[in-house]
Length: 448
Image 1 (cartoon, rainbow, N blue to C red):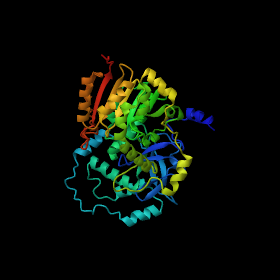
Image 2 (image 1 turned 135 degrees about the horizontal axis):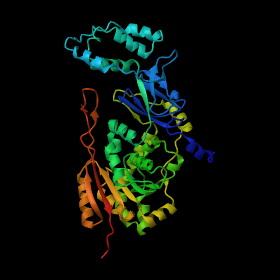
Image 3 (image 1 turned 90 degrees about the horizontal axis):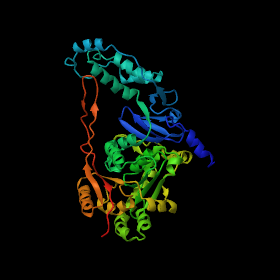
Image 4 (image 1 turned 60 degrees about the vertical axis):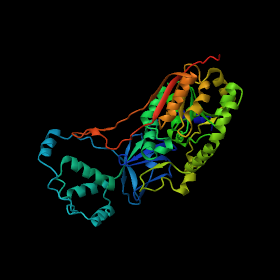
């Protein structure tokens, strides 16, 4: 069996889903984001309807599905949007002669009642048919502007014919999903800051990257994705307990990539470098309590699928009685084995080619002064923190110790724009700050 696994990984099409893969489900154009692992028994609850995720297996990423009312139970059906081109000139002429000033919102414009909609459902009407019936029975729909009509149609479509977009989980989509709903789990690391971290650390193919990841495994997964199965990645940690990195399971890494991700304590790396454990003794006591709390968090999170939804939506993605069966049949390759002595010795002789730190709960200078000697000379490093002051202190100490050159603190700025006809403007709700990044290059310091 072990000989056939690498072959199945090599022929697996990464653009098409398979049983056991992780997916990101975008419900109603970003209203709700759900991570799921596809299997025959996994389900998804949308409103008061529970649908099986089995129709998603074998479909290409980017496919759009719509909830349909079946005879026995609701199901997800493949939906292909129409590509009809409208006459823009005629629409503009009609738009000039209409406005919403004469429309009074008194809940009397709709003649279709709730009983009528229930009767249509019992007769087997689809969600799109219900939406068209609501539009046809609206007394004010034709009087509205084109923008208002589109908004009305979209609102009814989300209620009676919700749609699910099948997205591939990779660095950007995973980071955006977590930053939207649970930013504290990833240390408020925004997607532009994540990309800048990897770029400033010069992560390329065949690199040996040293990573301190306290953002749930997002940074480790992003670096491994950039390496693409080449080089090596060492996830290090102070103390005796590694930090949880459950997010890495969602990247759908094959065995070739997973076997190049290692874990090694800072104590073992420094002892291999200097032959002593004195430098790590101070960090060990400070981080023991934090490591134990992080391990407890990891155990609680790993017992259920990560579920991103609104506060009013508390339904579980996979029922508790199906969790064990799903996890047994659809187990992802394990990443983050303990680094062998041969790899540690190789890192000691050659040094790491780059260093990336995302540890919001640790002091940046305490980590850097022990990690920087592990790099090769002229190797770049990048440190992320949500706040400026810890990085400013670290930068000042690096200058005093003459351990690095080219030091700079960057604040990435990402501004999202809504691009629509006659209404293009920056989005109203944006994050104020994406954190700060301290970058530089390690230098040789002569001992005189």
